[in-house]
Length: 123
Image (cartoon, rainbow, N blue to C red; front, side, top):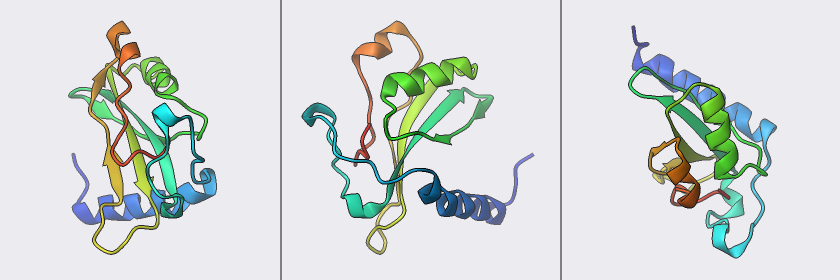
C-alpha cells in the first residue's frame, strides 16, 4: 500500500528540515573527490541501500563517509544495491534540490568505480 503524494511530500519536507541539524555542509575534499556543490547549498550526503524490487531506504551520511562506507552499510542492511545522493537545502528558485548517482550493485567490482551524484556534495 502506498501513501498519498501529499504524505510523501510532508515526509520529505520533514526530512529536509531535520537534516541540517544532523550534518553540517560538507567541506572540500581531495581533488579527485572534491565538492563541486557550492557550500551555500546546505548540502547533505545521503546513502541509499536498495534491495530491488522489494525496498529502498535512505539515511543522512556523516560528511566523513566514503562510497565504501555507504556500500558496507547497505550490505549490512541486506541490500543488493546502493546509491549515493545529495540533498540541498538552499538552491536558487526552480533548481533541483537533490541529486543521485547511478544505482550500483554491492560486489567486488564496485570498489573500483565510485558513482557520485552530479552535482557532488562530497562523496
